[in-house]
Image 1 (tube, rainbow, N blue to C red):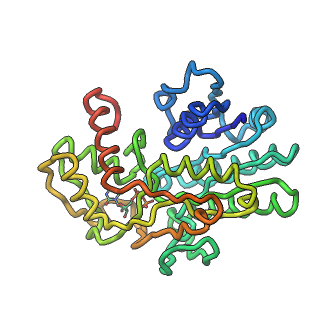
Image 2 (image 1 turned 180 degrees about the vertical axis):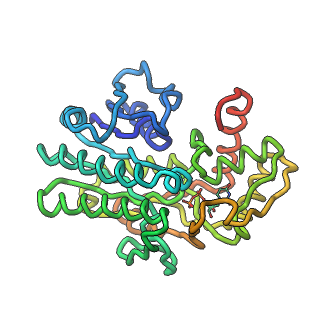
Length: 327
Ligand code: UDP
């Protein structure tokens, strides 16, 4: 199989590319290197079956050519990270919506299978835990930039499902919950690489709010496995899937676990939201996936234990720190 991965130099994309190559598939990566990095592709470059282009997923002729050359497209290119999203809302909306439109338009010409990456952010402020794919989306006001991200990804989903219904393009939508692991950078605000770097440096671990908000962290290897199985599952076409672990942890507990895993003496510091984010930012209190649909269709659900996930991220941050690489 030949797989086109947009955003393939990013965190999830580079793990997907590596895994595909390891099982003998061909991989073609497109990335504009805005948040992705060639370093992430160190294990792919020069491998048989691997090729890449530096360019934008909004470039119509380029994307059309690359979609045509492959059997499946996994569209991961997007503006990511709460910090980036709040600071650059125009870029976020435009990148997310345009690129998805371009990818789906190209796939429609020859009816090629496309996986559209979405996010648990689309559940917004929903309080019915765990979140199921058919739940209502509860988004906040347009005056708060965070919701622009959720809304742009929800539009991506609608567009994908519209292409499926109206133009018979085979699409699969994956809603990734907090996906973490080696190579994820803390630069765009993601909590786990930040905590790991802080703990290893002996800096205060910055817990926003009172730390009672919770998340479920899934290992990137589990996310990749889920995507690969969905591509092979006939029943997945035209459907939306939660992809995430259901082990819930509060952010305060996470800070304690990271400190322990790193063998660190760092203090845990509570930072008021008003200091952590721009005015008007709203955090989500709880976010837990119901992954039973994924399990029903592909016989698999993300299960790497949180302790193992944290150890992996701490080890990765330790390597970066030693190498003087950006966190
Ligand atoms: N968070 C934190 N300290 C940090 C970064 C994030 O306490 O240095 C919190 C953040 O406010 C949120 C949770 O950790 O409640 C997860 O944040 P992240 O940005 O990783 O993901 P998301 O908010 O998209 O779930």
